[in-house]
Image (cartoon, rainbow, N blue to C red):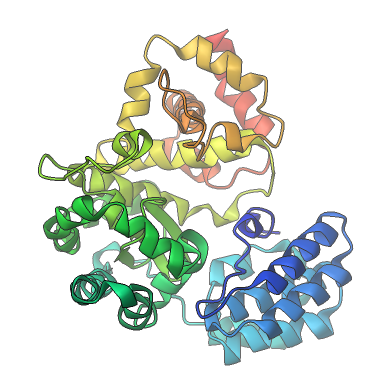
Length: 419
């Protein structure tokens, strides 16, 4: 199956925008447990129950899609089609790459019923980089809500829900479920960073005006990877915990984590936030990074640190090829002269489920080295693979369709270089 069943459930899609989902949480976790044990019928049944319990349309269609995939893994096409048709026809599920790359559906793909579903879905992406869409309505809605909260802080949660979250695009709904989680914490995090948010407004509103710059990267990707697809780019305001992610709706940039400038008041920010909030000048490179993630649906599922590092490092490396600079240039600077040391440490864990020590590990406070060094390692692997390839376009295609991460590493010959 596509990686998001194994990794996506780390986020679980368990939160409903209007109320706590502890019961859904339990169902989804238990379903994930049964899925890993290959008891697909039980997993599907639990995920379907989760879909019935939630009210949010995005949560509901996602849970039904999980159930459909699990039923397919159990070779139960009847229930798989039933859940999938609910997700697609009734609830707007539109993740076409996910369906096409999910091997559990393979025995169903020749049927007319399957073909009808695929034909019905209208993907949000295009194959033409010149048709790029930039959508920043969520940012503008946030600031309208922000101004209302300034006048009535006691009702902040309701104001943000009514005027920002519930008015938001489907991309914002996805971001809320996966990156914000609940409105109470969102308001709390904003309250303790009032000075910072008061000084970044101008730049957050400028992000949507850089279309021509983003578009150059999109055009370049088409040149080196003709199979590329180009989703809309959404800008949203989060709580400084995710600068970017992807969904079936498109690329989603948490612009408040990508607008550091000399005018930003950072006195309330933590050490990690000061070190990891990207600059506004770096935004085009972050967009390029997320664009590469959107191309990675055809890659093998795996829970190892090596896989996670390659995915992130690949987004940095190919993102650099198309935009001119890595989104995580600071990691490349840090790694100079420390290549063998970092690689030796990484090798100890690379075949284990230890991504949390190398990716998204900002809470592991260490002032001597940056977080996210898994990105650096993955970048080095992909760069080594690319540089020795005679056919560069073929190398890009092979990167985006890795089926064996250990073999890919061996073919890169990075280990020989860094011993």
